[in-house]
Length: 170
Image (cartoon, rainbow, N blue to C red; front, side, top):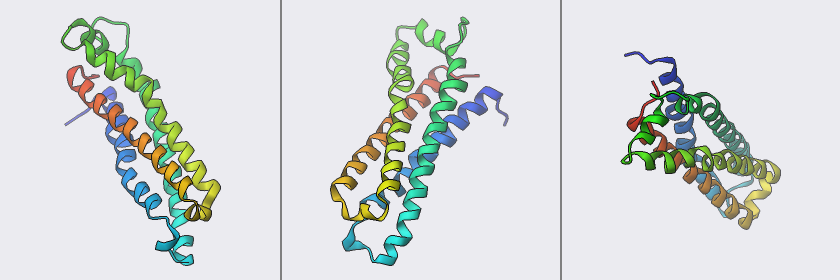
């Protein structure tokens, strides 16, 4: 099995970087959800906070790498001004036009919310540190932001997979 350079970058963008973010979400969600004083000893809190800080930071970095590779490496190939570009193929048929109108527009615009939200979560985790265990409203706000980041990334990933199925970047 071999991949062209474009296919390899598509795999790196979606199946590696995007999938890492989506998979790591479960660990981050569990870490934030269980960060409650009634569940933790002082020693447990000292052990969990650095892991949560590093985990949310790495997830934010991963989200940025995902949208950067998508926007400046993969996306120009999709939108190339040639008749056989994936965008041209999708827009050529009424049956597939919605894939571009909804799918790529989501990926182009709404998908950028993922790294912004993930960065906000990481910042607040670093800012509050161990105090986060005693701030239930802040934790709840982080859970909402974190979940929104996951949802925007998940929808972008689904659209990316479907778009690549309809008109692959080769």
